[in-house]
Image (cartoon, rainbow, N blue to C red; front, side, top):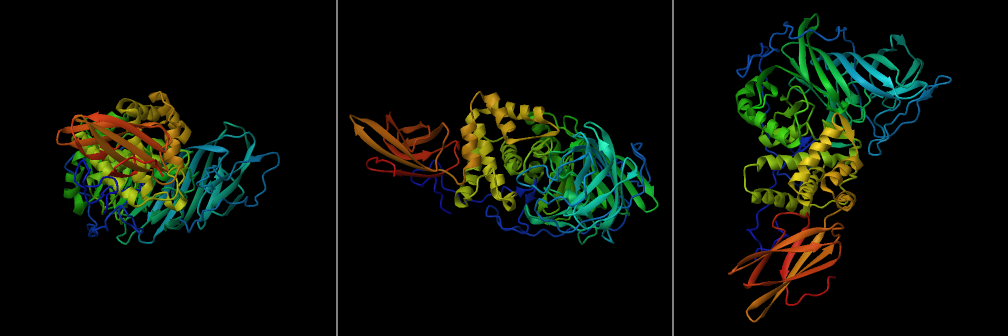
Length: 634
């Protein structure tokens, strides 16, 4: 593949065949599931693991496990379990929906039926703020059915709130819907459950909504995801898992399904042995029930609904701690246990590395749970949903980084997905090269750049079409924007900015403007032109680097010209390196928005070649050539 950036006669290193092994993720990490990824070679199929026969969980060697004995209570429950009875969803569409026709009570107002995100107008609702979800569900894997209750504790954000709506994909059977114990009038269609409150609420009033529902377990297609379905699923091996980014939470429980409304979660999940349940947060209770075994998990820190998950399989639980003491717990298939113990050996060190770079790990525990999913993994909060076909350290670290990028601070709009996936990709690269010389990072970014030059897109990174939300640009181009920001403001401001960002917006969401304001603050620069160029303009700059040399009285004068097309609109320094028999010299070309920029230097040696951007400061298609005489840029 041609490297447009450095002809071999002028290159600072031999031209490489481009083989980019950065995986694309949802948090989603995708390894060739359902859609062509120009940045990855075709995936090598991994044999599907054969799950063990119905036997008790093997006690892990890392530490004693609180999950193995189904009848043992590991902690007192924090709420009285209610018998479950609930449903699952059909296909969802991507349109904002009209009012369903349920009259608003006299003298009351209705909450909005959209969170107002232009990228996903069908998601989310206004008029209330959810404080906690309690999901009391019985999951029947053989029958592919779910039944139970969703209890939602919320606060009114409007005066005279008399009507509100929830996201819930059409097709569930609603057994009852109550508010503060009283039955209410409802309308359920167009993937919204709308209800009238027994009496209007004042702003700040708290209320409890309970929905008993049931139906089939089946995932739904998403207009944002081209390589997998979302929602609760039962693969052919009879296990269970839920993947919900970005619009799949509503496919298995009623929710305010947008990151702008984060809440605590409690999961009371009943399954038949030998299945064992893993979910977000901390396991607080395991007990026998008439219809199976109930596992109770609590996510005590606020979580966006799309990050909620339950996973059930005949798991072994592995436990340990990071060197700095962060509790680790992983759920793995018994027949892959030995391999995964080796793979997870660096988990604690990586978690401590991220904590040092970005701020303290934000949750009570961390771990991975393997699932039978072809080629996708997801950064479900505190417990990564890990495809059994993506067992490598790059995937583990990418998803771990999302505990900060996406989980601790979520996006105010799905248009900003690059901020989650780009930084996760970049920090995976930083981790993998943490002990290498600086040239290793430059080489890795050059590899990514080569692919981006070959496969340019026609939409801006900061506003991808819905179907391109998890396309390669969000990962690789996003990583390059993170890298250029790093180079533009320097190590100290870059990492201080990220720590400030996570501290300021932890457990909440942040908008693009809020993100940019943090880096303006820490760098002392106005970075608006930088972000406008890379987030609002499609395509990549073309930088044609021309040079000529004149000799006078044994001194060589080198003229360097940079011609820009679709170029940089912010000030930056672009470096080139002149090399010859007598040595080498680095020149800085100050790009200040002009189309034609030139510099002249004198050299004590005869230059024989020129290499551009040796430290990889600028993402661009570059061509270097020697000319007889410089001419005006076309």
